[in-house]
Amino acid sequence: MRARRLAGALLLLLLAGCTGTSASEDGRVTLRFQSLAWQEESVEANQELVKEWNATHPDVRVEYVQGSWDSVHDQLLTSFEGGEAPDIIHDASDDLADFAYGGYLADLGDLLPARLKSDIPQRSWDTTTFGDGVYGVPFLQEPRVLVANADWLRESGVRVPTPEHPWSWPEFRRITEQLSGAGRYGVAWPLKEPVSATLNLSLSAGGQLFHRGADGKVAIRFEKADETVPRTIHDQANTDRSASPTTLGSGGSDTLPGFFGGRYAMVPLGFSYRQQIAQQAPKGFRWQVLPAPAGADGLTQGVSPQTLSVAEDSPHKKEAVAFIDFLLQPRNMVRLALGDWMLPTGTEALKDPALRTAEDGWATGTALAPHLRPAPAQSVRGYPEWKDKVATPAFQEYYSGAIGLDELRERLEDDGNLVLARYQR
Image (tube, rainbow, N blue to C red; front, side, top):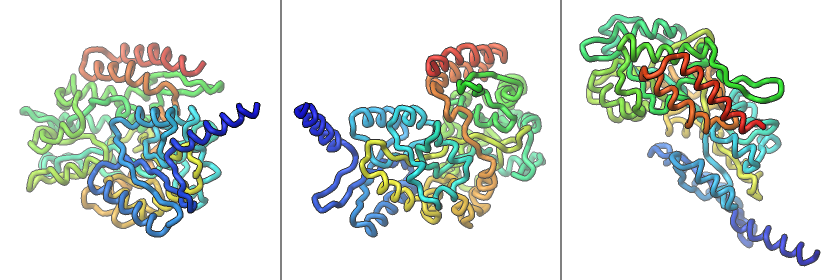
């Protein structure tokens, strides 16, 4: 028995040596912070904040580690299973569910300072709450907006929407048809990844798709409210010919040359794409940011905020949370938001004048912040498999005109519920 205890102790020591934290002989702690920042301004803001922390916290040093959005899920899974996870983990809320339920992330509920808890609205905390625990701090969010050719809209004489008076989905469809003709399109939908765009925008029309029963199990039901957004896109591309059919399989960046070249009046994009547009737009090209269309539930749309989590294996969770609290002080959250061209979740940061200017559409985005809600599939186990194997090909075929609405519904529900059932036994 004694030998077994010694072996267990040695194993724990070995595992501790593999974690992302180290402590020197003088007691100084080193925490590894894996950031997914990739834009030059964003990387610079994160690295500057790490330097500022290290300059004022000699006993707790933070080491900046560069990660990548392209491979983060698999990379984290491998590092968790190998006992080599970073202490502080940058990710997105829709990627956390399996890690939270799998015991890889620390429950931050009792570790978070009151200031941070109260500054971020509950609707944002809901995106990182799984079961009874909070497994990440949501800090940056990105609404979808319409980026429009300002001169084209002005010359057409159409009503230009505002957050106070947005277009309805039927009005949006009529206007894109009015703007089309002679080889030009009212809108270009970049739907290489159609699922999150469709589901998040569908919240404006009251669409839910995922319904949790009294037993806690989730079922997929494609109801009337869920039809509004996909039917609009389908009809623009296949009936009205007001949406470019060639961009349906494209990413957001792929549509920008055609947008700048005058082929499309508008492109629905994530808010952060404004940076690319500001940098790449030809001289004299005038663009503006418009709110996405509104439905029965107004401007509501789903988001999956960027998050900061702490590894369950980290032996210095309190120090890791203290660094997160520093990183997300209102003035620092503003710096991170400006670097990523996104919106902060914090109510104090959202008040900053730099985020409320008309330049580059900041004011329009900030006006949308109160309408952002957790993405519909936020806490649904099995969602990644459903999205990849069922929903993505079904939406792609529907938008291209290869299948009709009834077959779309059948595949989302019947095939989808079979997938989810395997995760809910």
